[in-house]
Length: 320
Image (cartoon, rainbow, N blue to C red; front, top):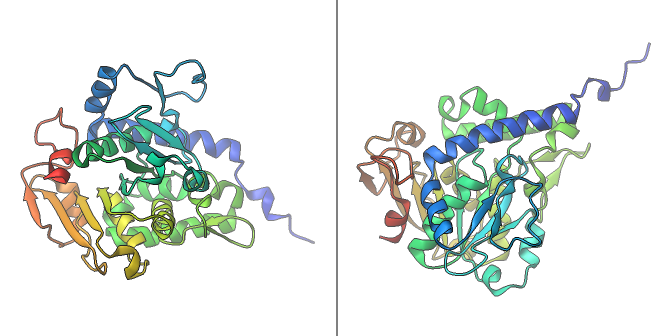
């Protein structure tokens, strides 16, 4: 008797997508805790801007409405953030579209920021806004995609239980396993990373990570094709940045400034200088550090939300 096709056992994509959107929406709530969202909203209001958070919003006749509709979208995006000129925040859902854009503001962006796993467009925009104000130049904020591998590892507490480097390795293995068993589901949350030049797939079409996670793959692709002067990572975004950088040649990392907030990484990137900050009251960051010491201890916790006491002021630390 022949066995039924494996496709019969694959979970329907229609079931998984809304569940991941719900996880992403929960992480958006955490973004308000960990990132300087109130300051971003206040600054935009002073400029007469508002933030759109629904994909159904119409932008054609509402120039004062900024598109951050990826709050629930698990696919990820690139945001070009420039507090000095309208439209202030521009969103790209495709790496190729970003690389092909001929606008001077986009072409000249040489600073990249990465937030922690699962962060939404709102948290990524808030951190990128802090950095752009600190350095006076546009920032490319990588909004991490959020797929089944992220949800499983986050649900198991793997980011903290395995150690951050092992966690990224585990995440890549989970993504590969999901891809082998359920290739259609494995593609959810991977649109941005799969749009990067050089992205890879299994024989059945399922996406796989090249450098541990989607954010690392995107940063690696950007740095291979654009001159990047600064990379800033907060929390596990710092580890994602390090994973991308360690596989690049010295010609791409020479003169690079790497800033980590709340997660020190190994300082082993040829030609790069490191500026690492860790809070004295940051239990999550110290757990992520796994014995690595920063250049500077600061009297803060893990959050960069300046409305909260003991928060890490990203703008002051990056610009100092």
